[in-house]
Each structure stands twice: as C-alpha cells, then as structure tokens.
Image 1 (spheres, rainbow, N blue to C red):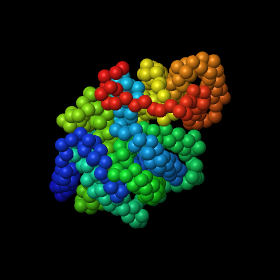
Image 2: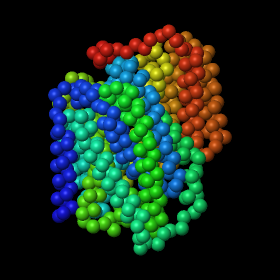
Image 3: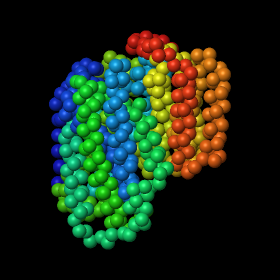
Image 4: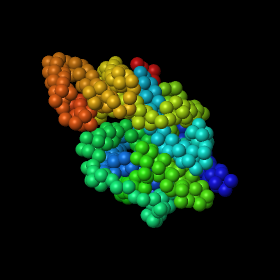
Length: 513
C-alpha cells in the first residue's frame, strides 16, 4: 500500500507540474513562444537523450560488455551535430520535418511524411514505456496493458495543458528522479552482494568487443538521425536565442558522457551478478536492485522508472502529435485538434506495445525503415539544392524507399535479425530513396548522360558490395554511403550557387499539389 500511495502521489505531482501553465494559442503550445532559456534547454536536451541512453546502455552493456559505451558516444555526437545545424533550421522557421518538406514539396509530401512521423514516433517511444512496464510488472505484478495505459494516460493528461511549456516544467523534476534512481542503483551494485560474480570472456572487457561492424551501425544510424531528430530540433528551436541552444547542447553532452559511463557500468555489473545468461538485461537489472530494496526504495525506484519513461515518451509523442495534427489532418490553427493528436499518438503507442511486446527490436527496424525512407532523403534535398525540385519525384522516391524496405523485410518474414544479403532494410530504404532523388534531379536538369553513368556506377558498386563485401554489419553502412555518394555526384553536376530555396507559405503548400 505504501508503494501504491507514493506512486499515486507522484502522478498527482506530475500533473500539477504540467498544469502550472495553461496556454490558449497553438504557437505557445508547440514552441513556448520561443521563450525557453539556457538552463531550461540544457535540462530538456539532457533529459531527452539520457532517458534513451540509460535503457539502451544497460541492456547493451549486459549483452556486449564495455564496448556498449560506443552507442552512447554516437548519440552524444548526434546531439552536437544537430545543434550545429540549428541556424539552418531556424532560418527556415522550423516547426517539424513534415512541415519543412510540405512547404518545399507540397501537400502530398507533407501528408505522407506526416503519416510516417506520426506512425513511427510511438514506436521509438515504446522502449522506455516498456521498460517502466517491466519494472511495474516485476515490483507490483501489474499486467503489461495496465502499466502502458497508466503511463500513457499520465503523459497525455500532463502535456495537454501547455505542450512545450508543460514538458519544460516536468523534465527537470523527472531528470532529478532518474538521477536519484541511478545513484541508488550504483549504491546497490557497488555494495557487496551475496551473488557470486560470473567469469566473462575477454571480449566482454574489450573496448571493441562488440565488433567494429556494430559500432559502425550505431554511429551510422545516429548520424543519419541528425537531419530528422525532430524532438530535439523542436526543443532547440523553442529557445530564446539559438546561441543559448548551442551552448546548452554542448554542456548537456558532457553530462551525457557521465551518464553513458555509469549506465554501462550498471549493465556490466548486472551481467556479472546474473547466472542466467538468457535473461533479459532490464529484467535482470530490476531483479537485482529490487531484491535488495526496502518498500520505500521500491516506490522511489518506481517513480524513477516512470520519470524515465515520461522523459523520453513525452517529447516524442508531443512531436509526433504536431506532425499528425498539422500535416496529416491539416489542422494548423486548432489547439483542440493538437490535443486530440496527442491522444492519438498515445493510443498508437499502447497498441504497438500490446501487439508485439516481446519484439522491440523488430519495431525499431520497422520504424527506422519507414522514417529513413520518408524523411532523411527529402530533408537532404532541401539542404543540398536551393532551387525547384520536382515534387512527384519526391513522392516516387519516398514510395520506392518504403516499398523496398518493407518488401525486403517481408521476404524474411519480418524478422528483426535475419535480412536479405545481411543488410538491414532501414539502410536499403534510405539508399533507394536517395538514388531515386539523385536520378530525378539529374533528369530534371537535363543531365541524361550523367544520370545513366551515375546509375550504372552505383549499380556496379552495389553488386560488388553484396558479392564481395566485408562483414554483414558493415554492408548496410557501405550501401548507404553509396547512396550518399550518388547524391553528392548529382549535387556536383547540378548545383546552382546563385539559386534561392523556395519555401511555399503554409496556405499555398496545403492547397497545392
């Protein structure tokens, strides 16, 4: 009963934090009227990425050992790169990736990219929601549907008051609670426990024990995420000054490096104290910590896990709701519809979690395949070319990328580990989108010979990679690099330094096709 009472009190306090401010305009709801200060941005960016890192690092270190550090380093690098692009996003009045693409390529691309973002962000949010659900299931024997539903309801009720400002109010307290949980877990793991420590193979302690291929995948995946890290970009765009946003991001990176080290250590210690190697990393971590905790600390850890879930799920569901409401539903000026969009995102996340709860890895493959195909390539086009680009070609490229990625995944029965030629479909989807976009650019600029030569060289390089390529983990990265080379080749042949990017006003991009 003590645990339940404390958790209920925590939920009430979180709701009060979110209700501290209530807004009545869409602009204030989605970006806080661009009035967030340095310290607020620092806390929000740190909360966003630390909440993602802690869960993944503990699980990855449990599986691979010390080399899991590289995943965290790749995320920290991504966050810094996003901050370096902020002047460009700020210059183009960034609201969301789907809005940026819609204003550049028209209504069709706006809706398609908005649907993909709205459909995939609940997938990316699912990892922490399931982590909180696993804790509540372990500590209180709550069923999965109840844990997910309560977490989602708490998020929706809290954010719907003031959107970005509600998130700003909550994230500081949530980060504080998570730090309490981390400190307690360190104290528990560092204290001599009755469990005998397992003897691990040498590669578990090696900095490259996970293998160069997987490290390359981590860095490739997160660097690719730079142009479509919508939740972080929206947070930084809400800053009073872009300079403050940059400095806050760089300082948060130092904080993240400490969290990366500590989370990796917790994962390693969990593996050393777990005799069953087939046990899930997070479950093993919770079992060890809870087995040596009083009811009061179990309740505090429960609050910490809920905070961890809200810190990650909140910004992602909020960001997805903006794309769904603005770019799919076309409700640009309705605060009511924006709040409804938040509910839609929460319901989608719960349904995903209940559909295939034990296959989080597959959900990530599915989500990254769709997101990479629909957002990465078109956003790179906006970055590279300032003049008119054929809109139908962008739609064709997105459809080709999504179709290729899902088709290749379907051939292997939608497996999360077995892929055609050993290439994760998220790489194939992004590459095909880039190749179609580059080809369309060359043809649009009447560079027929250049298009034929580029396609022939890219096709030859792809065949050589598949037939004679190195480790399977590196094939996807190399394939993506070939697509990027093709886009660079098209840029060199067709760039116009004197051109200016044509962004359509909101109303025109909605009406035109």
